[in-house]
Amino acid sequence: MLPTIVGVRFNPIGKVYHFDSGIITDLKIGDYVVVETTRGKQLGQIALIIKEPGTPPEGGWKLIERRATPRDLVTRQSWQNKEPDVVEFARQRSNELKLLGVKIVSAEYSFDGSRLTVFFSTETEEKADLKSLRQDLQRRFAPSQVDLRQIGPRDVAKSICGIGACGLEKRCCCQFLSEFSSISIRMAKEQGISLTPGEITGMCGRLRCCLSYEFEQYTEARSKLPKRNKEVKTPAGVGKVIDVRPLQEMITVEIPDVGYREFHISELSMLSGNEEKSVGK
Image (cartoon, rainbow, N blue to C red; front, side, top):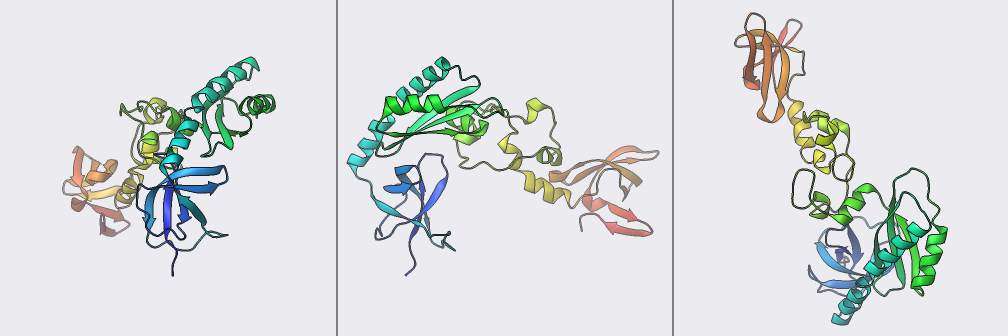
């Protein structure tokens, strides 16, 4: 009998992790469960029921420990209520220790309070010496085991949320993006977007995640079109490609003695030596 694999989220817009439901056979999306993770026991919510789990990871899937009870939910809430105090103390000690460039972002207790993770970011490339800060936090919040974890600017933006650079009420990262994909300047170039920093940079100071949303569509559309400076045959004569609009499949051509004209790819033919070939085929 194949195991029932479920996807569990520990934050509303967090990454989904796969677990084996074990002997618990009636789990539904939205149910809360208790699982063991590398950061201690955590309470998560079922986000997916995976019908075809595929090949298991090395070592197999971890088992869900049990279904969460109302008491478990209250316990988690009680620990969450203590997290703002942790952040305030950590920021105060960071200032007192003169840890320049270190920014305390958030804190997170494990489900049972046995572990406390403090998330921070740095403004410099140099590794910050946080040994004293960690020792102070350990003394203040014992018996919880304190860990300090550095996060990147995109994770900081996700944690803080707020208005997006485009004016969206909530940034994509804290609205629906559960994972960050790799973004490159090529994505902006392929879509004909201005490379002005203000146009392609998000509130996190990195390239906007939305540059990847339509990148594949533009790449596919451009593959059917002639590149700039190529010669094409049009109903108005032979000319040189000046600009393309991939999604509309429209091409601007400069034709001698005629000027600039715009055509659909179905009206054009590519010239290669003595051969003539329809564009887009």
